[in-house]
Image (cartoon, rainbow, N blue to C red):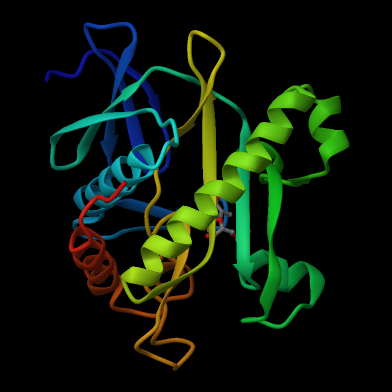
Length: 244
Ligand code: TMP
Ligand code: ASP
């Protein structure tokens, strides 16, 4: 699989064209950023680990009926995906209070919700990815009302499937961010990646609130042992066979 023209370079990935206009090649980088790229660094081996974790999770979700952009993983840090038009919306699902939700609402860290919370953020670095209301999202014409309903429903379904998957790994899925794209037929597909860069994952074997963190919060908050945490997630994820 040879990469064609570079189409886009983001903070953690590079997207290349291929000889098939319906297929793109995603290259996962070791680069890490946080707080809208105010903090920059690198996590050794992250590209390969996130590509492998995302591959396994996309395959698992596909086996359970979720349509994703994933095609295959021709190289350790490269994924072939269906070409989709990415919606400029970050869909966040939260099961437990953490991160910006705690900062913005005062809800204590670790509060377990009776029902998952689904939020939409505007994927726009210049504006700092602000939280959107449904009406703002529609005003900006980022999606149709039907698509918003479908995003909400897909996000909740994916949350159920991923929460159960991570539970089997001895990991609590605290929250995560999803991106979706439209294929040529206008169907919504799950896109981007699902990895410790885009999820909060807590080790159920550990109660200490710092030690249990297995995700990018280790990098964001300088908690150390970032690579080890990603490696642990990789090993536990790959140990779970894909099940329908
Ligand atoms: P937040 O608490 O900072 O809003 O993050 C919620 C979830 O979304 C968390 O699992 C981390 C993930 N996330 C991303 O994947 N990309 C981002 O740019 C941000 C801000 C969060
Ligand atoms: N990926 C985002 C950034 O750099 C934020 C984050 O994940 O915390 O800017």
